[in-house]
Image (cartoon, rainbow, N blue to C red; front, side, top):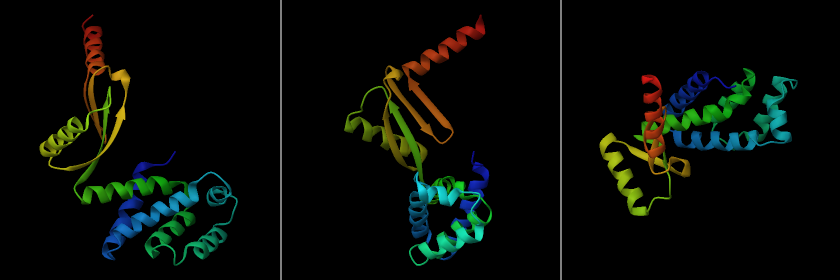
Length: 180
């Protein structure tokens, strides 16, 4: 399992360096490209994460393949992961890097679950009100979950706001079981 704190440290370091060089957007895109190219199941991924292949050999091959195709900051981050035997951290580092970019831009990801597909007007009104209340711009991922029965559930990072019937029933059941 990937250590998220460590992935965040790498992402912060990469973001700082990319910011100093004014290539933050490009580095994010290149990290996404590298993650996509190297972490797909198959021979390339097997080579990339194989502990039996010598690190200098991996560095040489990856350097030859990606030099000039990705920003030097992204390439050096990739080669550092190889040197430190942390190749499998690449997707988590990418996710942390993108989260840092969103935060810097005043955006936040939110998952909006509803029991049924929301009408476009309901969806836009809800997102607009949420942005006004929180003072942020949200990137919304919409999901339909019939188990909610009715209502909505918002998930923002580690915060969960549950306004669903299923959530209220769960809360009531907990309250009744504690009182008994």
